[in-house]
Image 1 (cartoon, one colour):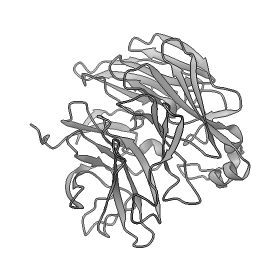
Image 2 (cartoon, helix red, strand yellow):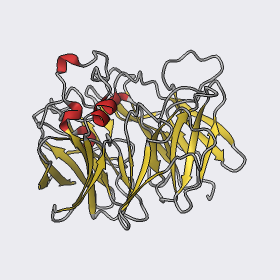
Image 3 (cartoon, helix red, strand yellow):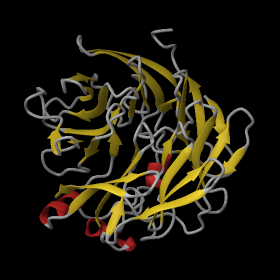
Length: 391
């Protein structure tokens, strides 16, 4: 475990559904409060020089996860996504949809529609399109005094229930990254969408979710919108899995677009599992963990099929509340078996969404980066990844 960005300020990776690294792996993009407020920075990993990209001084925007943020004001921490090839970040600042290059030149592309709140955004693989999911603001209509007081600051009601009972909608807003034009707006009726990703193979296809589902948790989470025929497909259904009781979470495309990985838990057995959906056939595979591995986490798959996670794995003598390790697992999907390898302790106390480790591979696949707050402030750390199978 090697420190990459560790100082007296809070520094963290971008959300794990977007890369935090430039395509050549030479620059790492991160969020930091070193200016006294949250801003986006880039570190040259060869020289150690940091470049400030945004100039925010208005706090952070109220949105999914940032429940205690400012309405219509501040940097949208969850909206930051990176075009790794062009070294350009996209984000929401107040009501403005912005992009900024590596030199900090900022362009306002468009604005968020009134009475809608934002969530985790995405850039298409070719850098041509930006998708920002929004939801009718009534879904997050609460007083800050009504938020729970732990590090997660959850509202004191079930958001998914309100969305369904009050017929609220979410929207997949797709913008041209050059002109800022809203080229498509897809309505997701009575659903709370908080995660989106373009297919790396076809930007007309968008993976999205229904968040914190209170009913049909095994099937309502993972969806695919196909812009060619304007259809919405539920990807985990009674037809392609054997055990649908329980819940699933954190669906994410592999970098090559060949598969979607996710994780979840079965109610009937109490076991947790990792799953994969092949994008060409939509065939589904799920492999249950043993009864020891129950610590919630996040999964990212390398192109050779190796998965990195910050959760689930633990030693038989561990007494832990959250995921303690950065570990990899090598699945044999056909045989239904997993091989675990512990890489290091992440040491984070997971006290808020910002301190979740959210491990990611670099583009070359030989390093893993993650966030941890074990030194008192959040920092970014690195550990060597296992050798690629094709090397």
